[in-house]
Length: 281
Image (tube, rainbow, N blue to C red; front, side, top):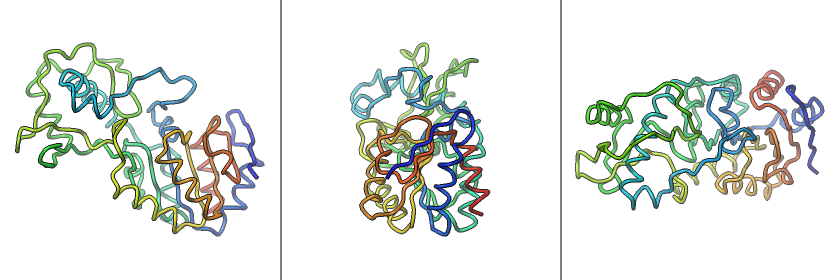
């Protein structure tokens, strides 16, 4: 049976108490989404105040040079702002719970790398990350810093302007991109792509399998800041539910997994994770 409690700015106490009853003494796998990073200044795709966006698809990126050029300009400007963000209290709470042996694995749908910055070690970045770039032809790999330096060297006018609107995937919409030179692979001349999973692209099997191992070996699943609208996350919830393992969801607003949750906490993610950390340590 799902317990749903609403709250304003404070965590819903009855739900938190019930969650603690279920989580105490159990090993916990965690699934996080964009709602966890909002307190670090990264917007949520689906929050009430989120602007309407049309993210780049893998098919457009590969098949349309103009759209690929537009993506690289926006992604570069967004990446420079994105990389200046810092972990918030929720990230730090989960890292502390892992260090204490309570959290045994963390799966994130975010590409911001903030869990690793906060100190979490057992992390599966389900949708990739922005730290690397891969050639789609020869699979050569490059650091994002290296590719960014080439992009700026080839395009001296490409300077981050004030007021850039950052997206959850580190992308922004540039004013103009028609004359930008896009970096190609220095090994074979092929198309370079950041190590993020685009819309319309499959999550690598290795990432899916690693995420499944985390949830399969845990005695509870905690979902934090995800609406579970993306199938890659919802499949993990369904997998856990079939095992009869308790599921706790923290998210402002409804999620696709609410009917699978033993407890749903409709409250701020960071402050609720801090409260859980304090009680479970």
